[in-house]
Length: 292
Image (cartoon, rainbow, N blue to C red; front, side):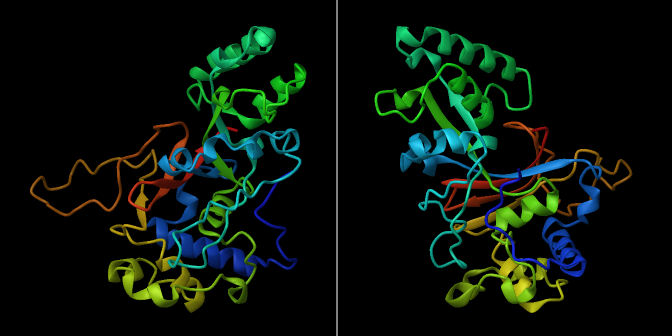
């Protein structure tokens, strides 16, 4: 079962899909088709210092049995897509089963030694893979269920697990992930695009508006402008070039033209396509190409 931010109203048309794909191509600086093959999978993730500072990375809502099994989404309520006043202040909804957790089996009592051993083995197996030692919520839940452990129990140390990256609920395509990262999951037409910039429109740099000037629909264009400001202290855009984009060897060495993209990045697992740094690096919303 694929969990999404909300159940989209019926009638999402091919025309609207094409409109969104073209619009996000403007945001990324190149068509979506240039990012991976048709079978590639993507996800949108929320992480950063704010999770720790607000103690949300140890909130037991993340590790309920149904949440880790992917049977229900969770909405912590304290996590907004953008800082208050920027756009529509969309509250994020997450898929805990596909979120990523750091696990420390040393925090377990001796009575749960077998559980700890299985956790340690899973962490070791993950260290050489995409997430470098982090566990998917589904794997964490599977091991806990096998040993009959309730990770949300009050008598279990909260230091046993830490949420690293919350997977915003969505489908697996790049367009799905970009929708989730920008709060457009349930929008099936221009009329359902969330409210625009309002009073904060003047705070978005003119260059951000220029990045989406090619978006034909005015509501969508105005909404996405807030996600295109590379200098914003509230929500700064960071774009990455695809892995197969090579530098032009014939380029004049004296050419001082500034590159519009950061270097290709595989840090923290997955191929980063685009990232938004919120509230001066307090949180990040990142779209990655993923294996799982």
